[in-house]
Figure (cartoon, rainbow, N blue to C red):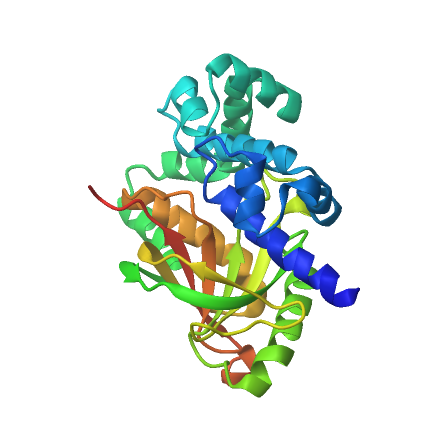
Length: 304
């Protein structure tokens, strides 16, 4: 019975990933079931039992959250374009579904979220206005933040990884148990090492309910590795990424993400809809000052 439960969870994770990678097109239940090697007959019940929502509900929520993220990141795109690009048949259907899910229209959501973000930066903006004539001081303030980080655009390889998935708030309480469990499996198999451990963050907690945010603790493994127990395998796509390199205390990860996206917003690049990931190069115990050396990798649209 235990093996059956683990096998179901593994295959449902495959179905979740398949849906995430195909949000822009209409997916049939049969197609989703086939991606996870399920028959149609009981798939919808199994999916709901594991995920807590139906496959259709999960797909609709991810499309709405993708649209919500684009409303904020692509402020010049009109709402109809965003609706169609996220798999909705019309702006009317999108507006109705969006209001039901978020409790406001897409335009109201965009204004409220951008307004909240702007209000948080009000103090920084007032500083900039006060010292507008003194560009040297502003450069010093910016450099103080960015000197902790090196950033570059890199072609990242494809990674075949073993992983454990957890749902919930991106926090120490969620992430550390996942990595402990993963390392207990990987250590005896000699899969550990610098640049082989990753964390995938599938969702934006500003948009997705925290209890539904997906976190994958991952480790790079050889092709053909057979997972066991609660360990599953997947492929992280290669391609162009903005790679932001940090050497910081373990309690500074939130600041690192903020710094990475401040740099990214000024970079002129555009991210695609794949999830971001962290790539770790050490453990704090290996560092003389107890610091983590890691990269935040932001997937980019490839230039045409």
